[in-house]
Length: 319
Image (cartoon, rainbow, N blue to C red; front, side):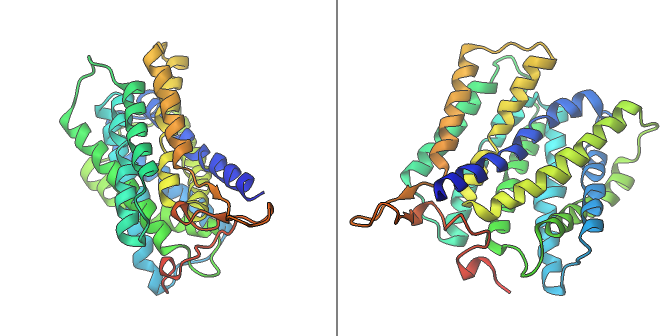
């Protein structure tokens, strides 16, 4: 029963990176060119305000700085860097660079939360990076150094954001919707002054641009981040980070469907390798010797009891 709940939680959480896999296509086809700060602001800030209107709860003084840190890492800085990479690199190359993110989570989780670095975790990281390389690498792709740096920085922001979100948990008595709304609003507010005074506003916004922003706000932010933060609460940090590898799979499949790109045999192998890495990184149940069949425990190396939304360790929820 518990294993089924874990599988369901992983499947629901994977919907978020699946949606984010469409960001590359939407950015290049529907949004104004070269406006990463505007894209970040219009994706995050309205989405955060929408969530806050349905759950009117504000952070306490203790949580204000944490929300600012999480909003910057998970939303503001991450989305800005992701859009910079999407504008300057082919979507596949950006996704390949982002595949280093689970490796960063593996190290941070060990340093901050004392998670053991196990051999299957390392193998899963190598499988994930190799699978993404097979999926998206094209020898003829132009490599833009700014785009590469942005993709690496985005991977670092996502990994750090996942780890700190897991480490701090959620304030007592605060629901998932306001907690997500806090972070989206904080991330959007951080990017507003840069969007206005550094980048400036475009001369006009077309109906296609409006459609793209609406999609990224409602589906790519409101829905996706609620699902994502729910998964971070219920799954080990490393398991969540591997689910993000679904993004390049979706980006590749959308390129095949909407842009006439071909899928090679190596790309199909890459998809299978990524799926294998994700499965390998997910928590598993371990049976205790001599116990009755209905009695089982969770392997402590794979994470806490995932049936509970609250972190088990007191260190992950400091007041």
